[in-house]
Length: 365
Image (cartoon, rainbow, N blue to C red):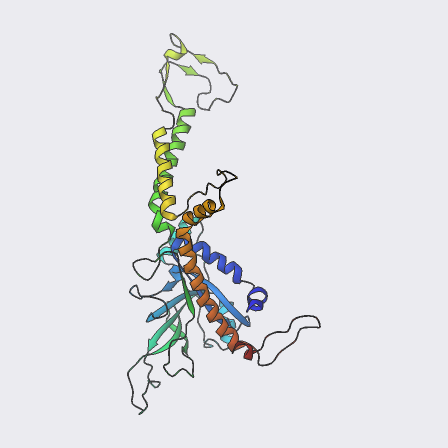
């Protein structure tokens, strides 16, 4: 498995880092593990939360009645899978793209256009279905009426079926659903999906951003104030700002220049707003468990136990998050082990002299 993860599955670490980044923000992220016939190796694909559709009342992804993965594949990628026999070899026509509201919002925030996406939208549904002609039967040969697990893949929009596959092991008497997805959760929520920092400290972040903008605007207006001038006052080139060290000619109708110009009373950045910003930042860090570790401020002669207690206190909430990630990774490695076991050659194939041999299927038993 170490050889597969470090040498053959070259996209494993980048995909996992993308998952961890998204996990803290969205609260839920998914991994899908399968054997890719076009690549000839296992794949652990990161899936954002919006591309996995699960009934909200489901308690976990292992027992959910339906799990749908929304995929996007180019015409060439889809053709490779058709030639490999993974999908039906049928004509699909030109792809049509209908972006979701989440995709539109993300594109708007990032600043790119999604109108020119030429990929097919593929929906892969892991469902229970009582397929006609393949009904579940008891030991007496009578139909039980129990729906069995299948994987149905179709093109979204045209609803063209690409494949229908059995989703249980042939030797499994109970015909239990085979798992392909792993759910990573940041903080458990009220339903199936978890909560991330957007849900926990999103209000504090929005308020803090508004305060920072107010402080910056106050400083800008204080340094470059506008004002009023009398109608008879004429300044040469008054439609352009005065450069540093520049003096311009002024025609004063009467009196001194200061009697004909009045700046608006803009105030300096408020100390009250600055204190409120610090307070909101502190509360957001406490809720998100992102406290500052003042280890550098401690005495060099501080007891080791005091330092360890401070570290444990500040990382207490994060330890729970890490425990959830470790649990999900354990489930991910279990699924990966089964895939490697099923697709590893029966016999050893050796590298050149001096290198380690590859594994064979019986090593996983």
